[in-house]
Image (cartoon, rainbow, N blue to C red; front, side):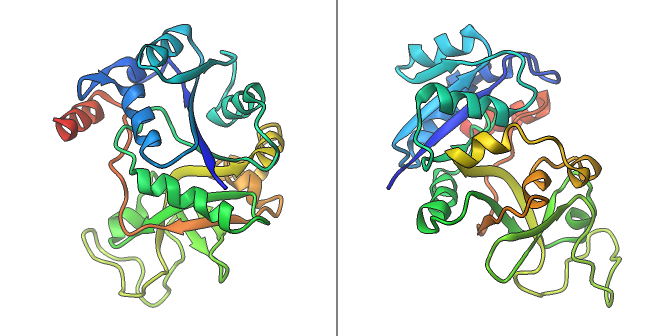
Length: 253
């Protein structure tokens, strides 16, 4: 069995306009992202864009791109439309790679997809890395997750969790207690089966999703098992700001 990678790409980003077309390592950022996906062993890699300029860019490099509706409010909706346009089978495994992550590790894409290929009964997968310092655990911008005994997500939160009553809170700079496999940082990488993706994209927002501002809670609240690949280290962060762009350009130089 194989998997495909779909890359939702919005041209009109708010904090860094037209960022997916900005130069990173001598090519547009979205092309760098597509190349990471090709290196993952995916059977098919497609960019799902909201603007003809992005489609033309990818096609100029010999890649596959689709023009999707401009009004989608999130990447998941854009992904679902792209899967329909491509006529993917219901049981197709689709990896959702954001168009602003040129430093994504190809092996991480493959490993996340492999969770669904190895477990046909599961519909969704994601990835996580260990949290080792209190500052990261306490940071509301760092999404944490708790695992159950089956290696699936039990909960996601922006709050520090699980809470160690014997030691928390800690001071800034302190490392967490040496308890392997307890504290995890969620990486915003997902894999889905296509039939599930089509349902997930139209489900209304759930109460916990609104409280935590985390879209994946929508699946957990409906009883969906989200398999988690636990990686040793995180890939370089994506690009949201001009400072992020400078960092990524330095990485590729």
